[in-house]
Image 1: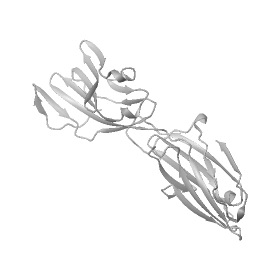
Image 2: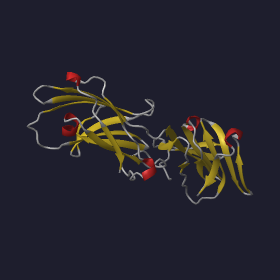
Image 3: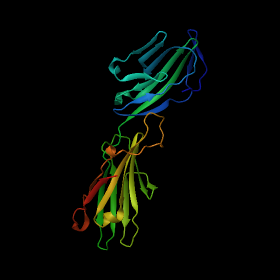
Image 4: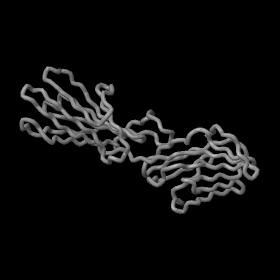
Amino acid sequence: MPRERTQGLESDGNTVSQTQAPPLLVDGVLGESVTLPLKFSAEEIQSITWLHKTASVIFILTEPAQIQVTDPKRKDRLKVIQSSSLQINNLTMADSGPYRAQITTATSIEMYDYNLAIYRRLRNLQVANHTQLFENGSCEIQLTCSVENPNDHASFRWQVAGNTILEEANLTISWEPKDSSEETYTCIAKNPVSNVSFSFSVQSLCKGSLCFSTQQTQSPAETPRDDSGNEPASPENTVYAQVTHPNMANNHPPIPICLFSE
C-alpha cells in the first residue's frame, strides 16, 4: 500500500520516511480475523517489524528468511501472509489501537501506519412499542429500537418505503381508519461491521395484529471503513426482534406477535 512520504531524515546512514497520509482505518470483528495489508516497492528489503502501540509484535528477516513473533501472548494468533501483511486471528478488544509496519532497506526505513477498531456484530434487535388506541379507531404508536449490547456503537434510522424519515432510535406514528395505505416502516440498526433491520405495517399494529420480520447483513471488516458493500444475510444469521406493549389504552388485550425469518 504505497503512501506519500514526508521529507527524509538521516539516521545511521538510512533515510527515515513516514507516511504523510493519516493512518489506514481498519475494522475488525470480535472473535474473527482481520488483515492489515502491506504493499511496498520492489526495493531490496532487509527486515520488516510490525508494532502495536510502539511494541514489536512480529519481526521478519529476509536473509536468511525468518519470522519471529515477538509478542508471546499472541503467538498463536499472529500470522504473516501475502507480501508480509499482518493477519490477526480470534480478535479481542485488546487487539485494537495503532499499528505500524517498519520496513528497513539498504538505504531507508519506511513506515506505514494503521488504526484497528474492533466491533461486535449487532445482535437481538428489539423494539419497545407503546400503542394508544382511541375510541374513533385511530391510534398513536411510540416505538424505540435497541440492540442487545448498548456499547456496540450502533446508529439507528427509520425508513418508509425505502426513504429515511428519521435518524434516531425513537419514532412516533399516528394512524386513522381512513388511511387505507399499507405503509411499511423499517428500523435499521448499523455499526461498521454489521446491520440489522425489521419492518412492519402500522395498519396491522393498530388493528391488533402485528407480524414483522428481521434481517441481518454484514459489512466487510478488513477494508478501510465504508458504508457500502454489505452482503446479504445467510439463514443462520437471522435475528429475531422482540416487541413489548407496556401500557395499552382502553384495557385492550395484548397484541399478538408473529415472528418469522426471510
